[in-house]
Image (tube, rainbow, N blue to C red):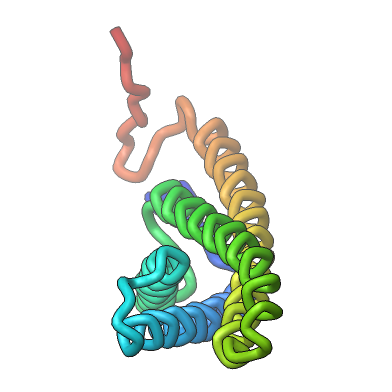
Length: 186
């Protein structure tokens, strides 16, 4: 972890995050593909874009953007991440979107089961992709909940370490004989 003495305020990222982020990226791609299949299937039959596919598309795109940005940001900075609170807020947004997609797909699957029985299996491929999209959204929701919890724990540990190092430096002379000044709030 970078030290406050060196002037850094970037927290290090545990190595367990890299495989989790890659899995999240792949599952985001799978959901994007499954949602695109639903859009194409509906448009082919002359219907409007289905409501359950829109959040899946949005969640897939947001997941791709977030995971790619996170991977680039951490790899280019040597395993450290800057603006960690903003990244945590964005991670919570992505987690919320995955939970929303999971709930919406669960509702659609529960509605689709009686419809499939009424049409004697003509919606078989469509319902299988719905179940697959539901499974992907459940798995990725759990993964994002785990990474959010681990990220928050890491963020709190970093803040405690940074505060302890800054408390030790109060009143001590820095290099060059300058005494660090504390900000005055009015």
